[in-house]
Length: 302
Image 1 (cartoon, rainbow, N blue to C red):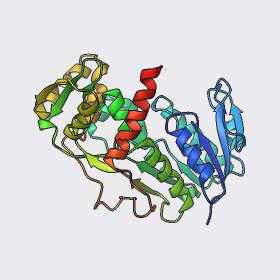
Image 2 (tube, one colour; image 1 turned 60 degrees about the vertical axis):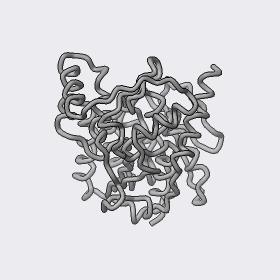
Image 3 (cartoon, one colour; image 1 turned 90 degrees about the vertical axis):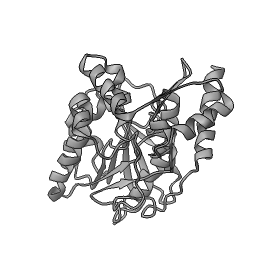
């Protein structure tokens, strides 16, 4: 079975725009539709069909938009993840063959994080909901990448605060964790559409490389020196973050998210590891830092 008609939701976002780029570049010549809200001012290439719907995503309008579509890909932001139940309901009504949820990011979340950051629970609940609908004929694929590398460096997610030039290194900053560029995640989505049988009804873990806080900080300091470094022990650092959130300080939530893999993790060797299945080329750490520095330099000129 080959897919031909693809509908992308969230095509103007950081990830969605790259998914759109790779869809249009695919040798399988997909017919690409972009679903956009009426209030959006985003512009899209002439090669795509744009269907606009009301901002609250009425299921009736979604169903009409998904008619004759093979695959729906959701690349909405975290703030819009709850809308996916409408997307899935419309997929079922329109007889869509495959749905890609806004999964990405972490593949598994500990209970303590779900309790403190309820938004993340939607990810697991949507996945469970899709599994429960497999007997309807709607297939699904979840692409998980652990951490978006260039966004993690730029935002301070890896505990490098650009405003204060302070780095907090957990357990010396040595543990290695999975990181993936946005472009590789986007390409993984398209490769999974191109290879429908190997990607059917499963989570696929993808990555560019494993890195560490120390490796990132060393690379950053080569161009932007003068960082203050604080070394902390993982357990006490994590508990402090939990207490911040419990007391109402939600600014610590990204810290807790990083805390789920700050002691290191690995995708290679796991049955869900998808790089080989998808023939996915991986970027090196230096290539990913090059992407980050290009974006960093662009921001400095604004």
